[in-house]
Figure 1 (tube, rainbow, N blue to C red):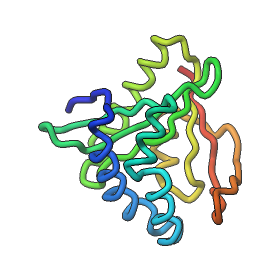
Figure 2 (tube, rainbow, N blue to C red):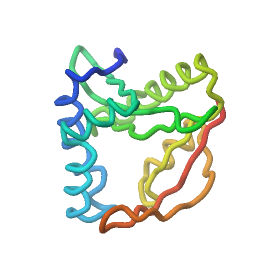
Figure 3 (cartoon, rainbow, N blue to C red):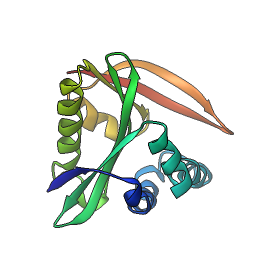
Figure 4 (cartoon, one colour):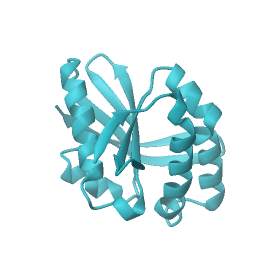
Length: 160
């Protein structure tokens, strides 16, 4: 497996991966209406381009040159990186890909003097257990108004 920095040219790949991953990952957690809205709002090619231009860095994981996962992160405040996104194809889950992406981001953050990696995860998302195994702890619980929806999240942190 190879992890590499994503570029503007990779936006269609990231958008397609999100579409493939989100439906099976969230169908039993949030409504189809919310999934459709969030995919359009956060993973359209235009939105992804805006995110990259605003400073969010994306990385892609590839197995045999085929994209299988992606992550997006940025400096949230001095000393804290925000892991905005980490999504792995269902067929690739359990293979260590997610762990490798977190390791890659953690190493990069340490090199840049960052001490904490933070993320939000829906409280009903089984991925919260994956994050706990990766060394994250629940920092706080939040309910975030997001357009016509409410995001019921854990904010999780990992010391680097």
